[in-house]
Amino acid sequence: MSGRAIAGAFLGLSLGLQACSSLQASSSGSAPQKLVITGSSTVAPVASEIAKRYEAQNPQVRIDVQTGGSSRGIADIRQQVADIGMVSRAAKPEDQGLNFHTIAKDGVVVIVHRDNPIQRLTRQQITDIYTDKLNNWQDAGGKSQAITVVNKAEGRSTLEVFTKHFQLKSSQIKADVVIGDNEQGIKTVAGNPLAIGYVSVGAAKVNVEQGTPIKVLPLEGVQATPQTVQDGSFPLSRPLNLVTQGPLNPQQQKFIDFAQSSQVKDIVQEQSLVPVQE
Amino acid sequence: MSRFKSEATWRVLLQILALCSGAILLLILGFLAWETLPILHTIFLDQFWRDPGWYPSEQAYNLTPMVMGTLGVTVGAVLVATPLGLLSAVFCQYYAPTGVAQLYRRLIELLAGIPSVVYGLWGLVVLVPLIAKVQPPGSSLLAGTLILALMILPTIALVTDASLASLPPSYWHGSAALGLGTWATVQGICLPAIRSGLLTAVMLATARALGETMAVLMVCGNVVQVPDSIFAPVRTLTANIALEMAYALDLHRSALFASGLVLMLVVTGLVVVTDRMTDAPES
Image (cartoon, rainbow over all chains, first blue to last red; front, side, top):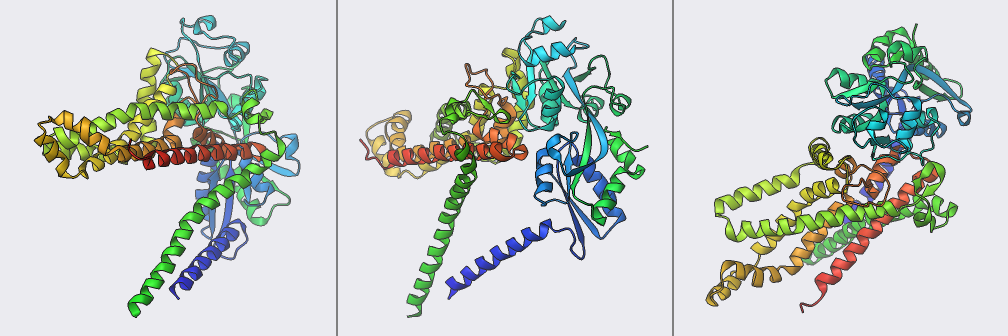
């Protein structure tokens, strides 16, 4: 008797879970409406802030922002488990059939420790450092000490932007430390005066302002500033996109319009990103 | 009569619960195997140890350096933590005054309760820069070993302590009657008597060290290579999964599940070996 009851309870539980997971994906429920946004961890913080403001203005809407990288953003949109994807790079040829809506721009900057006397590195020097041809700061104009190369893990869009710009293959890069997200990269460089790494300009700027001992290097003579990132003269910049597939439903349209409007310009700037709004 | 009936109900209930816990493990194993299938269909099995390296974007999936990394930090941590844990338990049981022993035990329990991410953060901002002063880059096999040793020390100390406490007082009476001192009793009688408890402690600690992710991810440097010194950075299987899973697609994702499966096999092997050792008759 009680055995059957327990089996029944388990069955009910599993059915309930199934019902939950099938609900999650649907966006056009009655009330409250739900919008699922997944993808790049670079876009997520700004998307979350925009979503909060959007929810405040549209109390019937609940927005769920989940991170997992640009690749996940694309995959979730293709499999239709998310309403909007977040992708922190420009559209590639294999993204056919997807619509990219740029909400901000971001740069990838090369950082070293604040105590490092290096003021600039040429494109060739950075390539050589990352391929281990140049292994001592002395050869780049610094002290005679070994260079600690900090690289990103496979699959991160920052790595993709970096390797594409310097025309490297990830197997050519000889790293001393491999890190996951921007914060870990900044902590690693801040804790090691011999390190060189690259992170999102937004993360770097916030940390420099907080007094973290890191230094942002100019690239090919161009400083990473909002202006140079926006007009594209800073060489390592990338668009932050919301991605959809097929025709937009009214809810998606409304949110994307909102995210591209001047109503959220201050949020974008607060995250040290460059707005695309006029 | 009713007593007999409730007995039967209990039996069914317990059978179902036991089945559930067993089924969960089988489900996980099955799921891992299922997710690994795509890559097994696509590449040859020997590519997992013959490929030039781990570059999933270029279809190279060598897992050997990461297996070595995992085993390296684990063995190192167990070698450091076992003597420390064992001796601290002996201190607690036989040498420390009661008050001090109580306080010390609470401290060790507290050590066990610190979340791994806190250990990792401490390692990243304190330990790694210290090691970097000796030999850059600092993030290294050594850093991982030390952090893991710190994390598994409480497990070894507490389990050993509990085993020592469970020894019958007659052992002490006997050895006192023979005129043996404290240390002679500890190393001649108590430690051999808790052999299986000690093995369990080491096994639990090893399993925790093998599975630890966050702390090693933060301090090990995560470079995929077979370490050539204790100052060389390494990547463990768990760190590999944590670093790349969120961003992995298709074969890359499947290869990560394969590394999970390998880890699972290593742990299974460990359990089988310790089982054999604890069951073996005392020589």
